[in-house]
Length: 114
Image (cartoon, rainbow, N blue to C red; front, side, top):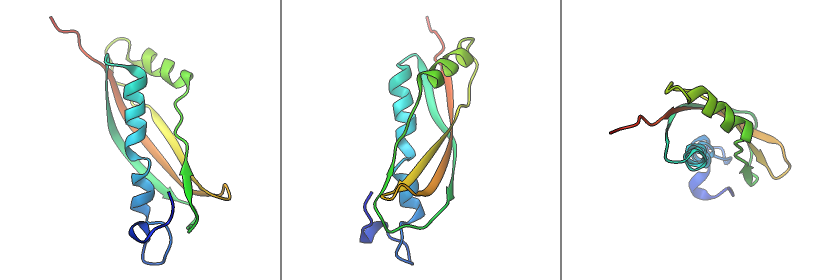
């Protein structure tokens, strides 16, 4: 995300809400896609820790490993809910850490009907 007039805060650096918004929906949507229709996935909670103010372009890579997927499937196989936690880093053009977002998702297998 490039710094623009609409995502700049009062002191001229990236607005924290914009940093959060750039990653917020993607983890849940990615997990929905990877797990398929047999699972219910919701955002449970999130927090952001600001590390360094920046005026540079920022980027984030959201990763869900095959190990993460296997653990989610294992934890939910008996119909139990599972609350996996993910850390997402936001870095600037110099690869310096700007913020870390901690997200907890709610995952449960869909109940069989009929």
